[in-house]
Image (cartoon, rainbow, N blue to C red):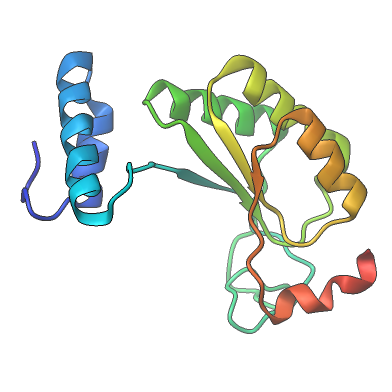
Length: 165
């Protein structure tokens, strides 16, 4: 199944996660974990990154989602779509997900809390949020709902959103 035992490719990972035979999948994942431990000293963690929205009110020049980019089709997942995709990801053995978007205020505090709470209640997936800078109260609500982490990517985009807090 692995194309090259010295280098695991994205195609290899997709093949492994697509296996229906659980014992075979477990052996392969265990061997990948062992290779990772030998090379990096820690257990490998496969994370799925789900871009829930490419709408953004900011205009960061380096980002393809910036508000002035008229060349991309804007997409935004609905709450039930996010939850269903997470169920599918969990069923493939991935136990960690990053929910990412630009500065998109369509998703209010309650919507994100509901997403987190449902994911945590129905799966054993760790939830990391990467929704740019938000208000302190939102972080608290999301932590109460069960979010495991919040990923901040500090850049000049984040400094422009300070006035929202």
